[in-house]
Structure formats: C-alpha cells, structure tokens
Length: 596
Ligand SMILES: C[S@@+](CC[C@H](N)C(=O)[O-])C[C@H]1O[C@@H](n2cnc3c(N)ncnc32)[C@H](O)[C@@H]1O
Image (cartoon, rainbow, N blue to C red):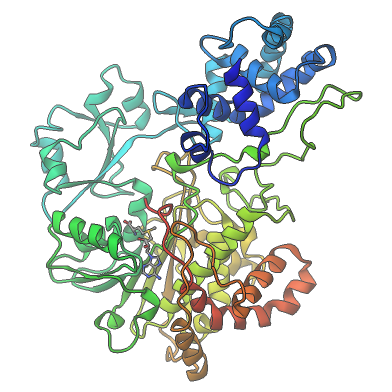
C-alpha cells in the first residue's frame, strides 16, 4: 500500500518544482520505485475526469468512510486501467475498493460508452492524444475520432546531400519504401521499412517510425541528416530568404534553424547565428561545423541579440529569424504535470471527505489559453481571471519575446522576419504578435503580418487564433488576415510538437524611418541593467524595476480588464513596452526549456 500512500502524500503537498524533480530528486527517499510512483501519478492525473465520474457514480465514498477521495482515485485508477490491477497486498483500503469492483467496472463501461469509445484502448488513446502524448505505438486517437501520429522527423542537409540520395542510395534507408500517408507507415506490418514525406509542404524533410533509431548511421554522424521536428523546420521555410541573402538568426543555439537557413541561402549567402549563452554557443559552433556550414554561418557568440546595432556587420541583414526561449509547452516530452490541478471525486451532498477544495476544472484554468483545444481559428478561448505563477511566468516570457521582436523591427534593411515559439500559449504567440503590431516601431517602419496567400506555408490548415486579435486597431477583415497569416501546430498534429510561427513583412511604401526619439529610447534601454536570475529561471530578479512591474501589471490588466479599461490603458501600455521591453530582456537567463 506504500505506493498509494506515497503517491497521495506527493499529491497533497504543495508543488514547488516539476513532478519529475519531486520524484526523482526527493529530499528523503521513497519506499516505492520512483518509476512506479511517477507513472501512477501521471496516469491518474490524465484520467482524473473519468475516474471522478466513475467513483461518484458508483458512490463508493458514501459507503467506505476510511477511503479518502485521493486514495480512491489512485486505487480505482489501477483497478480499472493498470495491467496488473491494484499493486498492494490485501488490506482495509484495497478491500474497500475491491468490495465495489463490479459496480466500478460497470460505471467505467458506462462512462466510456457515453464518451463514444468502442473499447478501453480507444479511450486510452484519446486521453493520451488530449494530453499531447503518444501511445506506446506512437499512435493516438482523439475524442473526435481523429488519429494522430508522432513519427521521427528527419531534415536532409542539402549542403551535403540530397533527399533522393539519402532515400535511394544510402545503407540506412535503401530498403525503405515511401508510403502515401502516415497511417500506412504506422499500421504497416513492416513498420520500420516505410517512410513518409509531404514534399509540397516540407521539402527535404521526411519521417520514419519512431522505433527506428538512425543516430548510429553514417548519414547522421556525418551531418547529412539532421533530426529536427517538422514543426521546427517551419520558420526557415516560412522566412524563405533568397539564395545569396544575408540573414540573422537572433536566438540561434543549438542551431537547427541556423543550419537550415544556411542550406536555403546557399554558399553565396551569409547567416549570422547570434547566441547569448556562451556554452550554447559552443554547441551551435559544433553543429555548424558538422553541417558543413562554417563558410556560410558566422556565429556571434555570447552576444545578446538586442545589443546588435549600427556598426555590427549583422545589422545590415535583410532577413531575420527569431526563435527566442519560451515556455516550451508544445514540446511533447517536456510537458510536466501540475499536481495541484487534481480534481477529486466527492461522496455526494453529505460528504465532507474531500481533502482539497473543489475547483472548476478547465484546461485553461491556469489563466492561459491552451490552443490545443482550439482546432480552428476563431474558436472562442475561455479565459480565467485566475492569476498564478504559471501566468506570471508566461507574461515575463512574453515581455522578453516582445523585446526581441521589437529590436528586430529596428534593423534598417530588414524586409522579412519570422517569430516562432514551441509554445501553445496565446500569451507567447498571438498576443506577442498583437503587441508588436501595436508598437510605434512597427507603425513607423511599416511592419505587418505577411498574408497567408504570400507565404510558402499557405496550405497548412491550422492558423492563428482570430479572437486574440480583437484589440488590433483595424477592420475585422484585417484582424482575420493577421490571424490567418500566423501558423499554429498542435501537439497532436504529428509534426513533432506544438508550435507557432508568424512572418512579419515590411511595407516598402514608406520611408521606413523611425522617429529618432523612439529609436533612441528603445535602443538605450537595451544597455541597462544586467542582473541575472538563477539558471533555468526565466523570471526577472529585479523586482524593483519600475518598467518591469509596469509592463507585467499592464499585461495582466490588459488580459483581464474590461474593454474600456483596456482601451484607456493601451497607449500608456505600448509606450512602456517599447521603452522597457528590451530592458527586460537583460534580466533573463536563457533556459533549457525552449529548445526544440
Ligand atoms: C528556443 S532556443 C533556439 C533554438 C534554435 N532556434 C534551434 O532551432 O536550434 C532559444 C535560444 O535563444 C538564446 N537566447 C535567449 N535570449 C537571447 C538573446 N537576448 N540574445 C541571443 N540569444 C538569446 C537562448 O540561449 C537559446 O539558446
């Protein structure tokens, strides 16, 4: 029973770090195997809504007064969903659940059928898909019946070889056959001998079944192929710099997108890979070398992108790719669990047993809009006014990301730039785009979002969330056009994780001149302050920084207050962001989460 008691005590304690850290780096050792503890908690969290319904319908908490709601979900989870049932020898708690086995099974079946799943496997796959996790075989089926796949994506490094050479004449892939759809690859009996590609959308990129490891192949070791998710390849494709052009990758390490850019601009082009963190810059240099791109890419090491100004050779670039650190909420294998969100069953009206106060459970209730739930642009995103650390962190990240974009807007010759994150949160995505468009620098220089029709990725179906642009000072049509210009990838889309990318273009109609005051203000702000938070933490350490507080405050109010209040504050907010946004950037240390 110690497994369940230990899991219950973890779930009851306040969460100050990730679930993985709680279990794998405990202050005092657990009796139960860590992997079992982790699996039990994660699986219970995933199935909590179903377990709650089953337990409440079976009314076991009414009859079993010794069984707490928390222990009931853990034990009932294993009874219904674990291969070997409840992992404990007989005892009063196990017996309390087993006494109701038939009833629990019947309620489980009822709940499953009510939700439209033919069998338990379909239900399990749907829950996995909902949480952006692949099932054991890499296939997941969502509650809408949509089957999704998570293959291993490979980008062919065209600086060294060609797709046809990799596929046709290499030892690793010569026995592979192309299939017309991913389902053929996943459901084929000879699964490892198939690959899939969709050249019209993603040139030089293909996928194989995830069970196939290519890291020992000659192609991988020699840098001919690069393991890079399809989603992570979108920014360079979307930016589409011409051959021979000069590009800046403002946040470059480890260099997946930098080397991709090099392959696109070719040997006559130039790519500046700017990386602030000196250790990551070393990784970047290694990757550049391995990709055979040292004659195209110049690494700008241990340099903050916002310090690149007039006089620096990168300042003359025409194209910029911005992929700053983000929450990484779209990355499949890095999603951790918020244990405070466990929604426990109640014993009915008379029950006083719930260990925690019941909370309205919504995936968005951390105060951010989770785009995984919004299949189509324009779908309403429920927003809560609840403010917690997750929201604070997102707002801090968003301010930092905005500062990067605003600085890029000032590059004198810049024509086109992409901004991307591996985040699913609107705060880091559409809302950064909105704030960037509202800035003086964007208006002065004529920056706007590139229209979908002008973009190489126009055929991708999932676009930006139109309701996030409600505050854009423009006609309805322009708001729609702006949202349509953005690309979203959901974690269940099979491109290797959740992602967001947008391409900004500059209208050439105006002189592109900045108001000298706003330029000076903006640039001088970047050189101010240098305090650093702890490694891995994206929060500012300078809580007394007036501008910082001002920005966060405005951003929070902006998200929560009424329309009128928002409009009243808009002008002030934008000024503060432009002057202080870049300043914020100085207080961030890059974290490890945002890496693809
Ligand atoms: C999401 S990662 C970039 C991943 C990269 N684009 C790729 O595809 O391999 C963000 C990187 O930006 C760096 N970074 C963060 N702030 C920066 C800044 N102000 N200037 C330059 N680099 C920065 C981080 O150290 C981190 O390596």
